[in-house]
Image: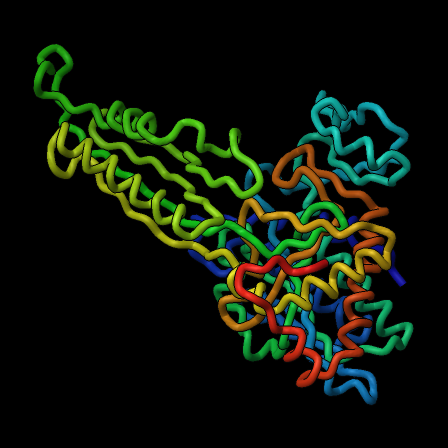
Length: 426
């Protein structure tokens, strides 16, 4: 059997950076290459009905062991693509037996410094997989894939008791299209977990409400020598628009449940300019206020510079899955018990971003998220703890064991009762 480390090292060989500009699905061809590679591996370890869809979705199943056919069908999901925030090509992992101090990242001049990343201190004694400082690692979310595949192999090879199991690997999660062509009905799971979080033992079921905003600025260009009282400089109006947003409500000054406006792109000339923002907030009412704020600022600038100077287009992306998951508190309780069984203390943390699980939850597949043992995602400082990845494999096995003891009708229905607004117990 392969180890979780061997699998991660195998998967990071594939450059699966997604690209929101291509318009294809999957957005980049190497995602399909990894999908086919995973499908072959799934067949090899004994997963049945393995399929790779035309859009790069990999699915498979393991039928229940005799006598457990009526347990709820349980799914595990991870994504194959990586962020375009750093290169995903030619990844050169370093394996480090961490004894403390600074970890140089190859010869790049970059390093993992406990002064910047204080959580390193609790990973002393762990085996870490880092980058060489020139690419990201791809632990987001190839660590999740490795953990799911390792758990599946151990279940099958060990003939461990289990209910019906489903496995799914999705493309393009990083560009918000991870569930675009995911066939929930064909996946045929009653509940699922995405394995796409940070430290092992973290359990996530609260994510941002999210939208993108495109703001266009239309100027009146004239020769600067005769511009007084005539020119409207689109770039300067764009800067003014940004300055009118709450300046402390940005990612670098917020945490936990605090929302933000995130300027991600600005381009143009004095004649025409465009900015793009991410709008994020856990609270639905505050989220709506953020949208209203953009339109209010645009109206103020149009009153100042002329109608049509500023236009705002907002596109919703995903919603906070808490409103779904709070109806199924047993999903969190089962995960919490499995975390404790593996020597960790479960920690509920808000997702300051999105997850395939949010979209799937609103499409009828309740799907909280689990930590992977990966850290510093989306950059050259990304790394993973092999020790925590092994713990996560144990957590997945613990969840499977607990689901095997559930009756699809009796236990699931009784466990799904929860008072509105009550925090699930873990």
